[in-house]
Image (cartoon, rainbow, N blue to C red; front, side, top):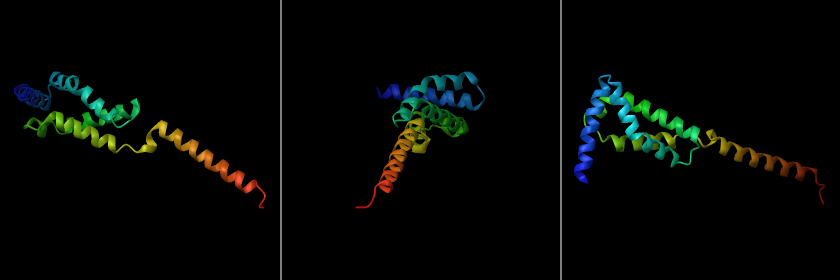
Length: 123
């Protein structure tokens, strides 16, 4: 199993170097190979599919920006997972449509309670 991991890392290094040199096929192979990993990390942060897609896009953009560094032997799998996690962690809670709906409901409830409290005569 360890030899498979080393072989995968060497294959990644070759693909990364080729992608850094402008080889679109190499880039496509990297994305095809690890898109599910990046997606799973993003969704693991309970992001909806739109926000998870944004995290994936930013993660791949960062990867493209660091191709030269990554081609020099970095652990691509670990780098992608850490980058996706960092990007997912940076998504503000308020950016999620679901959390915005919850916040709106809570705010509506608080406004209603305040209105009821001020409408009741003091005893």
